[in-house]
Length: 80
Image 1: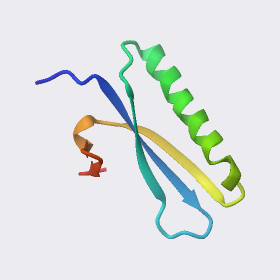
Image 2: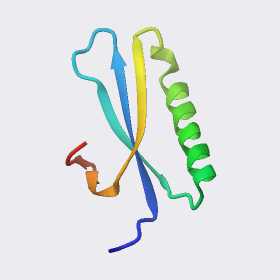
Image 3: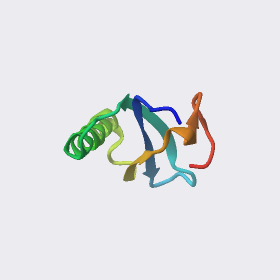
C-alpha cells in the first residue's frame, strides 16, 4: 500500500435548468490532522462559491465531498 500525498474533492454543481450536474475534481495536498482537513474542506467550499459567483442565480445546489484517490485516475471517474 502506498501513501497518498493528496486529497481529492468531488465538486457537483446542480443548476436549475440542467438534467445532469456539473462535476469536476479538485486536488490538494493532504492534511495531517482532522482540524486541518476540516479547514481545507471549508476553503475548497469557499473557493468554489467564489469561482461560480457570477452564475449564482442559475445554481441550485453545491455538493463538495472528499473522495478516495482510486476514484480519480488521470482525471477519469471510476466509481464516483
